[in-house]
Image (cartoon, rainbow, N blue to C red):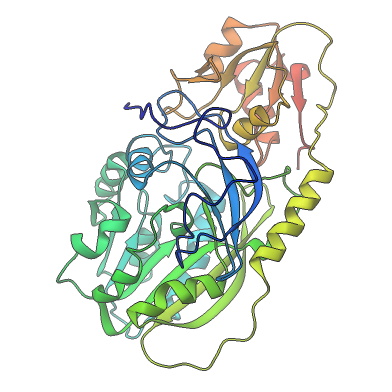
Length: 414
């Protein structure tokens, strides 16, 4: 796996202080007057091309919150081609798990209401292993295809008989030049893109009545309590959109927002994830009702997170002895960056993601759970999983039935 040695870490050169001017212009309007909200430290696994942190910025002009990431788009391209989990067994978007399949079915319901004709041609950008394409085909749509940068995701989808091609999302307008689609879908993709200027170019791929469907996390719904502090800010989600920001981004291409709807996604543990679904197309439409401010919502959320940022393991960790951290993903990275893991006692990270196994996080090995438990049979196990932490207890029972008493949670299992 390639490494971009120039990508700075959160504590190294390249990450500006709170009082510095904005180094990355707003990706929607280009303004350099964005306000710094918070600096986030996010240590990365070895080999990751992504930076070890960024400043969270607010553009009041277009109501967008974004990461002032020092990494270029090419670093994110490399990450989603080689490092991301969406093509593997622990990824989402393939419909391999009941909650993921239910989410895709609900998404298909929303998309069917957008179609200008029954046998529409659909392009799913950032389709992962093609779960949505399979659902749409099961609903009777057969002119569906996808584009994804991860070769393993493309191969997995093609093995299921789905029509996919490998390619970068921001190059879709040139990769698919000459094609015309009735519906183009970006479901939880736009928040991952550093450079957004390729999205208006998708208008060239639409039929005259074609629609563009964009679904992204909805900052107005960010809340503490159900999830750990700062849960919605990680290395991948670098844009936090309002409907206003999306409208401004698409307007130069002649696309208007036809609708903007807050939706709630149900996760595997029964919890909910706030999302914003917008539909854009050509032609004048009635003005949308006023939308809540994303910047103000994020400011409130950050203030609430600061109140509950210190987490205490339950039950408390033993006073001495080695500790295994189960989870090497976004939450473990946040905990490391916040100094909330017992770094002097950690001996390894356990993770089921094959893309992470064999790498290091903060100088410690990331290993399969079975191997880590074998190597450290007496270590306390600190669960660093934000969604359904109780799943770790079930997994541990299968690996070592007598080890459950060694589990310690940083959030109450739901």
